[in-house]
Structure formats: C-alpha cells, structure tokens
Image (cartoon, rainbow, N blue to C red):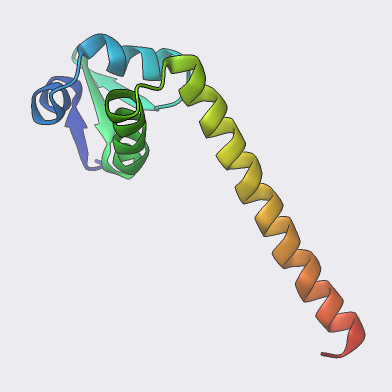
Length: 96
C-alpha cells in the first residue's frame, strides 16, 4: 500500500478548508484515493498540494488561477525538457 494521508488530517494539519481540498481534487489538480469512504492524498502529491495551498492562502490565488499557473508550469517543464533534448542532439551532431 502507498504511503498516504487522509483528507481530514490534511485539513487539520494545514488549517485549510475541506472545500478547498475538494475543489483541487475536482479540478484534477490533485489525485486522491478513496477507501471506506475516506479520501487520501498520496505522499507524492504533497509537494503539489502544499504549493496550491500556499498560493491560495498566502497569495490569494483563486482556483482558476491555480489551474492556469499549474498548466503554465507543466508547459514550461515540457519545453525545458525539449530544449535539453535538442541541446544534446545539437552537441551530438556538431561533435561538441
């Protein structure tokens, strides 16, 4: 079984609204597991959850803003990876 934390524990630990967590899940920004009617967040999803919570509560970014930021960061990562791949190809073909 994967390491995970319940939604209720996250709400208590991070002092957030349960509706915020549910909104993140419904929008596809977080992936959860459900067992015996309890929602769990995998530990590997915690860094993303913490970013979203910080942006929302500290910077007052609303859910649509979180979705846009997430999408743009994913796109930047894909472009960065493509750039690294092209740089390796360029070095290969130029003999550097």
